[in-house]
Length: 146
Image (cartoon, rainbow, N blue to C red; front, side, top):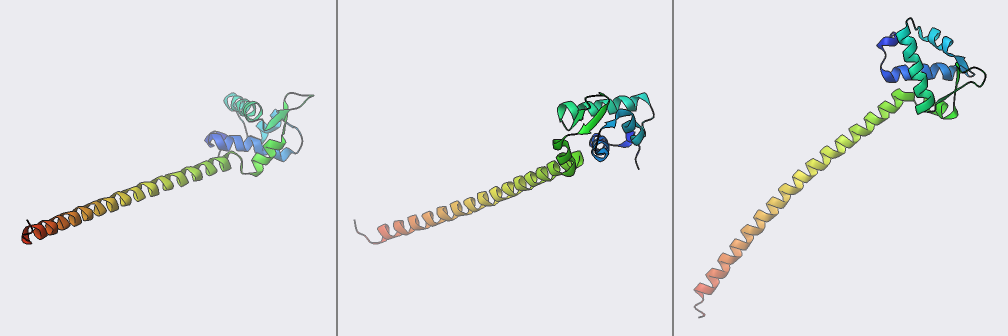
């Protein structure tokens, strides 16, 4: 298993969210640090930042009423975790981006083919017009209708 420092930001968010999700009731910040294997102040500070993000920005966790150092997951957080968490959200966004890229490529290819077809039709129309102009010229100059 990767150390906490080797995880991506989304993996770190998911790791902390999973601990709180699995706790079923309130979990203390000390238990979170212990479970993740936090070893220094830098990692402890990062856990605090992650908890603030989960609580204040995404509103996936709430603090305990008795102790502000206890956390539990909200219904929205539970649903988000069950839908794949931050890694799942990232994968869905990448899949959507790839889908849009494929559609863009298909649209460009189709536009190129339509432009080529338009050129062929324009050339064909020009050739036909020249042919019929020649035929009209020959008809009016050969019939001596003047």
